[in-house]
Structure formats: C-alpha cells, structure tokens
Image (cartoon, rainbow, N blue to C red; front, side, top):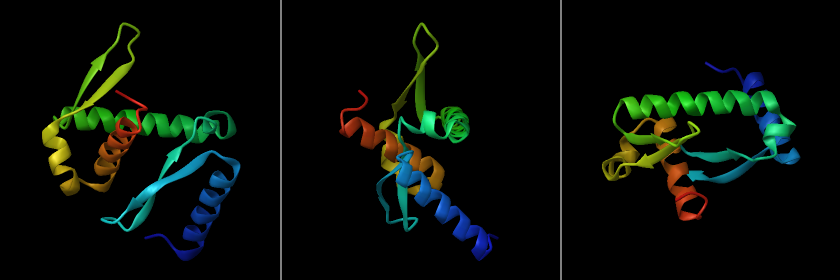
Length: 117
C-alpha cells in the first residue's frame, strides 16, 4: 500500500512533468476514476529515463496483449511493429484490466485523431 507521503511525491512529480511539457492529460477514465496521460514527444529529451522505461513497458504490454490474442501485430521491413485492434477486443475493452483498457483506448484515441491509420 502507498503511504500518503509517497502519494504526494508521485503527484508532485506528475505535476512537474506536466509543467515542463513531458506529460499531457488526455482524458478521464470513469471506470478507474482517474485522469489518463500521454508522454509528449518532448519527454524523450526532457526526461529520457522515463521515456525509455515507458517505451519498454508499452512494448511488454503490447507483446502480452498480442500473446493473448487481443491485438494483431505486423512488422515492416525495418522491424517496426504496427499494432492493429481487433473488433472483438474493442467490444470487450471495458472488461479488461486498466492497463490493457488504457492501451486500447489510447490506440482508439490516436486513430480517431488521425495520428495513426
């Protein structure tokens, strides 16, 4: 369990990341009752350790979800992964664990914004 001082430190750090432009609020999740965030492209240069850890975590999550059959992944000639959502997964996303649901919702948001095909 997280004590209040640790929670305060996390909140202060998140506020700092938002202030410097490394993180942005992208929405609010009513199921988990919390805001959702994205790292900005500037994060790679402002807080490289956070960027690297996030990249590693997202790759592990994508592989896990692919292994479970929740997403499809194809690779281009350079080895860059392209993630495709399955209709079935979108239909059941609200029943997935928060981490997987956030992943799916982020892909949907990026698709709807025209950031990805």
